[in-house]
Length: 358
Picture 1 (cartoon, rainbow, N blue to C red):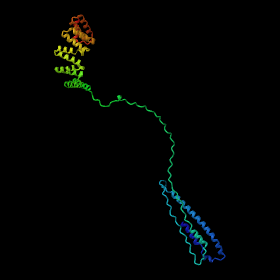
Picture 2: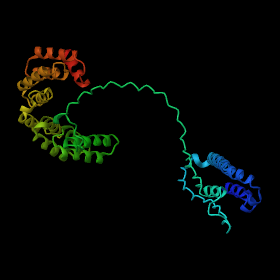
Picture 3: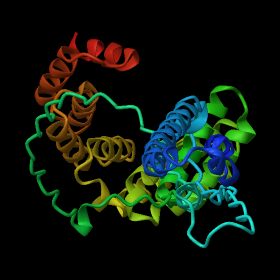
Picture 4: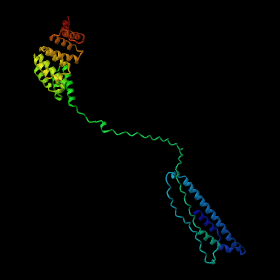
């Protein structure tokens, strides 16, 4: 705008004053007076063109500045505060001279009109909008196939009686007795007699009806010549039904070895009910009865033993001996022949049978 004002000032400076117009001839004065308005119109058009050009230059320069800003695409542009309009300095009209008439000259009117030309209002500044980079659209991928829903079978509830009890089970008395018995057998095999006897006794304390432990301990006591202790141990066994038969037979043999055959026979006859179905008991009772001179009773016991165990040669040989004692030689010979035909006959008894058959 300062450039435009400067041009207007130059035009006013070139304008002829009243004193110069008075020196012109009278014929020329009217023409100059009529040409003054045309010169004012031409100056007005010229000023308008200059103002429009200045506005175009300013707009182009502002656009170049915005485009050259590198950070406009990254940060949002600050709101432009419109600058205060620069007021163009007014062209002061020269005071008319004292001799001038009251009518204003056309040149002065043109200056007044130009002095009130409004200052150009700067157009709205364009805001640089940061455009986000365009993301290429992805091609729509096909959705994965849906798996079929499989209904799981319902697991039936486990009944209370079928559930597993995870509680720690304590060993019973029978389990402890069996464990002690096996420990005693192992110790006896290794020659630790006292340790074995202690294990057998511990087994009987847990389970008095443990027949194997009682028999093993009795045999160990007899082997070490502790007969009284062995007899007492077996006597207690005869009072217990589960081990009565085994304890009776063991105690009867012990009495025989200690020259107590009559006491042994008495013990067997006393507990005959426990040995009715035992060939071992019947054969042992027949041998003691035959030794006691009770041959007919001995024959009955041996016959019962051969019925219970017909393939046992001992009972057939004992039956032959009892029949010989009862005076039945023919029946005795048949019993001897049966005993010789069976395997497993002891050597001394086999030798006796051969002698009787000659």
